[in-house]
Image (cartoon, rainbow over all chains, first blue to last red):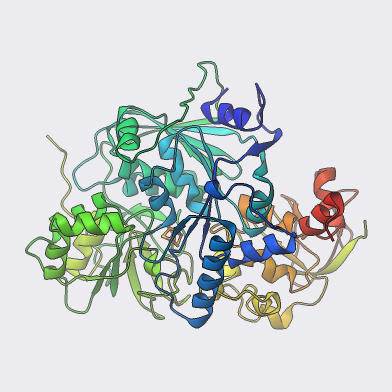
Length: 418
Length: 162
Ligand code: SF4
């Protein structure tokens, strides 16, 4: 069996599970984000009285942070009351950061655990050897009632990535390249495991980018076998009591792909789909009205330090807005302590509260019709960040930084590292 | 189970949840209000066109993107009969079943906007004029959820909740 299958077996009280079969798994941790008051409403519709285990339930207010409207403020208010009535103590309020990042920093994400969130990018958690997946409000309401959910045991795709990345070529470039090659529906209903020397060499921040973006190929979950780096990270964040599963040697993957990224150059996903990927050079020079560095895929410490390095002693181009939003309060704090914010501020960046920012087009940098945005986020669907007539170019934080200086799409110098 | 029939409203591949239900309306919680924005990101005239019982037809990977259940709530409350697509994104598919909205995968469907279409869920057949297409019938568990119009009724029935 694969490590992911062993997790599903453990969680459903079984010795063995097989691809395609339906299991009912006990859930180790759930997260409800602030978009989905519907979860609470559905829970009430189901006559819910007391959630199955308040210690395993978390709420994160990240998408409307702070609230842009009276309606969202009302929604937050009802959710806060729900948490207090239900004895849910793990409520991460406005400014704490984006759900996928906050749970990890709090030591709540553990290898071998089944973690379900009301957010599609929960695939991020595979970077820690957890089975992380997103669901809608009704599924979540059912879990709140019973602590269980049914899953089909997914087929598993192996993606091996080898080669030493050039400077200023980042995990975002790697995953865009892979999505461009495999397509937006390559992993629908399936799980993806990453292996190979590039993945081993990557720091945790970068591994999270790979796993995060797999949902853009439809993946249900992801997996990276935990190693010393993972263990150190988990220890630093206080995660204890977990089991690391290993895949059996004779496990047969549904598909296997192999990529050599040693020659990879900066990539871009052009409007309006995430698999519309090409070398950045193909669109270099395109005028950009707004640059956004942030989100659950592009707003971590590594992303902000990369930006600070590139923008040091440089100025953002006239006529280009440059928005930087750390993915969590802890990243904000470290960015300030290490001087990254000072550097970015002097170069002309503006900042907003840790959270999703303009990623889904509700606040803090919505784009107008005809405008173009270079963004480190994960989606460039029409209307994702505001006007359906706006253009979103998905790029790495290094490319976003070089673009902010140029006022048009440009990549940071990339050389083979010696 | 009754046969679903209506007129086809046809869309392309990779219709994502931002197109089905733009993010700026996620704050809404009233289902009738949510329905006013169905498909707004891809066809702003959808809500004027759609009639009760119509069938939404999509291409590959229908409903990809976010986990927002609003994308199904808006279609369900537009009173469509169901959705046929070449394939569905996972979370969207689960959300459809949970809310009792039939979601059928037919890989080789040929159909134009406005054509009449009917679906026999029990037999696993789709009819468009004289053309007939087969699909793998839904598992009994799923059919039962659709029969009782969603997981809420299903749960109530099986757990004695009023
Ligand atoms: S940052 Fe964007 S992709 Fe990530 S959880 Fe927030 S809205 Fe979703």
